[in-house]
Length: 637
Image 1 (cartoon, helix red, strand yellow):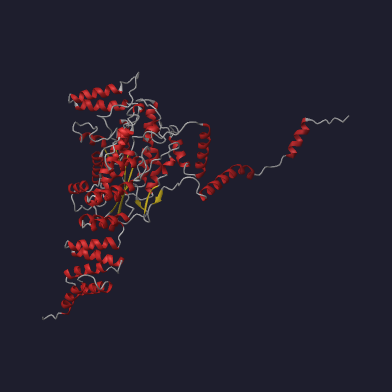
Image 2 (cartoon, rainbow, N blue to C red; image 1 turned 90 degrees about the horizontal axis):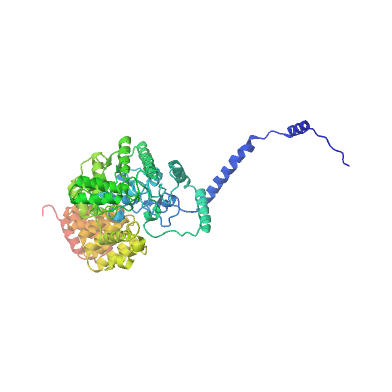
């Protein structure tokens, strides 16, 4: 038998104590350092190999212009397939010395839905400033997008400030519940602003994107649910969530907006950037509440709405307006911002020291019976063309009142004349109108306007009576781009010799895509071919201001000369020679300009150059002989 070993407890403790050795501090630090190094290395590798989405905020669209990255919305939407993007965010990569740069921050109303850039309030402001301050480079960069809310704008405002804005305009708040990351949204991350804003900060890292994609893939394997692609984006985002008046989630949405807007305004204030914020307007008179809650401690939204209608019929305007507003407040589907949102806007602007405008009051005043409805609103909250122009003019008035205009000098043109010119050259086309009308028809043929089971078939809802109708529905369905659509419409007008409509459509194209410089000269060439020089001059001038070249400077010189503006003709023709000194026609025309100024030696040099380039140029030899006789004539003869 083996001999038993007797070991006491004291012996064991003594042995263990003797075996202990001091553990270096780096051993403990390694538990922190190694994971950190791992994620740093992983992030570096993911960026090196361009993993995932393009996470730049601004992307180039030409040698000198940028737009807000069309993929930027992927930061804020996790399940929606068709991401929104801004359509009016073009801006020069380097701010020009004589530039006046405005940024517009908002959601779909800020973006000009259903017209988008063709009738947004930012377009009205830009065109008015261009007319009043022609010596300035006016930039109105609109980064508004559908279905976003204050979380997105708070996340992007620092990137906006890096672009050195002279002014920021804000129209924001309708999407606070159902917009991306809102408390009632399909994309919600909860009601904690700290958690949501921290998540947005983390979303800028490729490692987090990798993790998100991994989780999404795993969930996709075990989920049979399909992505919803029908209905509007906001309808998809709402996820049938009802939010009763004065409920906990109702106030969480208010607090969410208040906190984010406070941060936005405070960040701008610390950077000393002027800001004007607008209250929100919506359809009060002609939009019945979407969802009227029954068995509530509050009255029925529908009952309040129909009582308001009765008061309006009795011409009791003030009572009717109050009841319409209350009916909107009681609507449990919060596609229209509560009045408390407007009170927050006013309160924060006054607290931080920024001006504001009251768009809701303005649209009411502009309505015949003092209550805004379908007269200025296309659906439940998006203004029509006239509504957007009223908002734009109100912003402009606040800019003027608060000294936020490009110059303190009084413009050469008065405001009334400028407004007339804006309306005359607004370049809102039949295509724009038709696309918007079709959008609204489709919108109101779906939830929450009607029961989806009662939808009218598309071929009965939309009647395609002409080419513009066909082009419009192709835009909406994504079969052609807006650029292609405008070119098709313009080509049709030109073939019918409707040159005014051709010019208007091409002007709209250029305003929508100002970085596509080729269309300035292309349009001018077509109009010059048919001797429509007055229309051509508009495109020549716009092209020259954006991207001067031999063609636009040459024809601006020729047209000015034909109209008797000799000094301008010489300026542009001399500029054209710098671009191309081998065009005989330029020298021929500048000969006539010099002759009218009695600069006969210059004229003779120019006609000699014309003949050297083209000996057979019509009438050149005759004019040369005339100039020789003048130059060689003795003073006493």
